[in-house]
Length: 172
Length: 266
Image 1: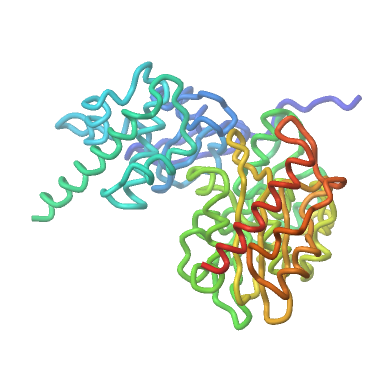
Image 2 (image 1 turned 45 degrees about the vertical axis):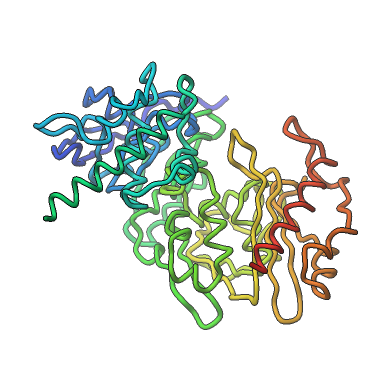
C-alpha cells in the first residue's frame, strides 16, 4: 500500500483581516475558518456543520459572503476578510448587531455571527429595503436550530432599515 | 483532508504544464465541490493547481451568437449579469438557483461542468442550449461533452476556459430542489430555437443529464405547458434513492418541464 503523505510544503499567506494585515506560513490544507479561529483566535466565526450547509462560518472575502469552512486560507491570499469581530465600532454595536439584540434574533447564539454576516451581504447586494420574502430567500444558506427564524427575519429587516437611515443621515 | 501541495500558476500554459507533469494533481477553481470531497477524504490529490488568479477566464461577453462566459465566472456573477439577463434570461435564473448565496459567491461555471454532478444545474442549460465547451485544447459540443455520471469528454489535465452559449428564441429553467442539499431532484431546461425545442433534464437520470427528446418533439409543434399533459417519461432510466423513487422523479420532471415552458413564455 502506498504510504499516505501527511505533510506538504508550507505556503506563505498574507491577508487583511478586519483591517489588520496578517501573515503566516500554513499547511496548504488549512481552511480559512481554521486560520481565523486557531491562528488569529477570532473565534466569533463558528464551525457548525463543516459541510457548507449551515452558514455559521460565513465571513466576507473582498466584500462577498463566503462559507469559510469551504475555502482554503491560501485562496484568500492577498484579499480582505471581515469577520463578526470587525463590525462593532468605537461607538458600540453595528446597527445589524443591535437589531438582532433588540428583536431577540438569537437564542443560543451559535448561528448568529453567520446570520449577521449574511444579512450584511444581503444589504450590500439588495439595498436596505428588504421585504420578508427576500430575507427568507436569501437566508437559504444559514440554519438556526432555535428560533424558527421569525425574529431573525424581523431583526434583519430592522437592521437593514437602520443601516439605510444611517447612510441617509451620513449623506446629509 | 490528506495533505497536498498547492500551486498557483500565473498563466494557462503554466497550469497545463503542472497538470501534465503530475497526473495526480487536481484543478481547484471555486472549490465548492472539491473541498468538501477532500474533507471527507474521498480524494487524495498530490497537489491542487489553483486557477483562480489566471487572467482571461473571468469575463462575460456578448458574442454574435449569444454570450460567452469564462470558466472562472462565479454563479453569483452570472445570476446578476446584465449581459446574460439580456441574452438568455433563463441562464441567469438558473445560476441564481444554485446552492445558496454564499456558495454562489465561490462556485464557478467551469468547476460545475468539469465535475458533472448528475444533480448539478448548469449541465441542463449547456445541453438544452447546445452550448460549446471551450478548453485549452479544443471546442466540445454539448452533445459530446456529457458522458455519464461525473464523466465528461475532458482528457487528463484539460482545462475548460469558457462556454459559448447561443441565444435562443425562448428558454426557461425550473428546478425541484432537495431541501437539504439544494441540488436538483429534477431540473428541466427548455430551449426553443426557430426550428426545434431541446429539453434537458438534470437531477433525475441514472446516467446524468439527458435530453428528453419526446418532449422536445411535442413542444416543437405546440410550445405550451398543456402540450406536455399527455406525455409520460419512462422511469426505467431514472434515479431511485432515499429522496424519491424513479416514478416520483418521472412526475417531477414532467411538472418541472411544464413550469419551464411557462417561464419561457412569461
